[in-house]
Amino acid sequence: MRQSEQNRGGRRRFSYVGEFASFLLIKEERGIRMNLHEARKRFMELQKEHKGNLEWEKGIALFQCLAIRDRETAEHSLDVANYAYHMAKKMGLDANRLFLAGLLHDIGKIDMEDDILKSNKRLSKFQRLVLSEHVIQGTLLLSSMDFGEDIIEFCQRHHERLDGNGYPYALSAENEISDIARIAMIADQFSAMTNRRKYREGNKVFTHQEALNIMLEEAEKGILDKEILNVLISVLEWELKNQKFA
Image (cartoon, rainbow, N blue to C red; front, side, top):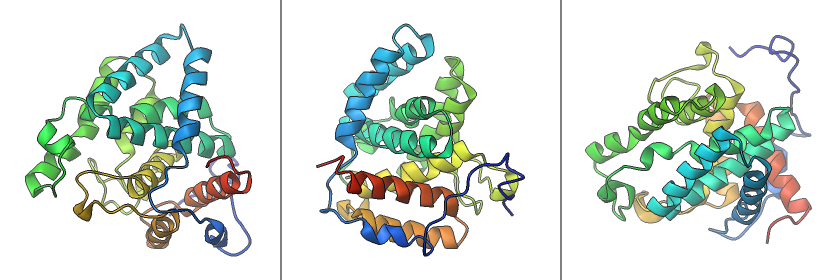
């Protein structure tokens, strides 16, 4: 069972009137990627801010290689980076670091075969197994290039789930999965569900509300973190209220 906020270093808890009721305010047209424009702008700002920082220079170079390799994966990574950035800010974490981590979380796909990475067909069981190896490949690449533990952890844990049914390590809440890992799980899943994925069956794109409905059900089952999902909901609500995206 997850520890209380006092036992987790006094981390602020995010609760709203009516459990997760704020998600009902989130409405948008199917397939609109509201996050991407701001993500590109933030990428340019942070690239300039961290010019000369070796880790950032390496990270940006890797990301640009990924963008050349597969635009869809790069756009998903930007999307994840921006959600992680906003969630980290609300939780008092280093938002810039989480943006960089989001950019690189799928870097293990950079040398994946085209018949998997760029497939327009439903993947076979074997192909899905190969696809899942991108987590290990990315972790090994980032480790070999001396990226920080937070960047590596974001990559290594983004497909784990709190009930132990994730991959590659099938970790569970009892393993004390960090907040960085929990942010990675939620930002990645939400972006993947609300954006086009070539190899998804039926190529379905979920609206924000459809995706949140599914993720809320998973949070109730102990698959995702309720508190951190609520942080994402607050980010989305704030974006719409302030008309940050068109």
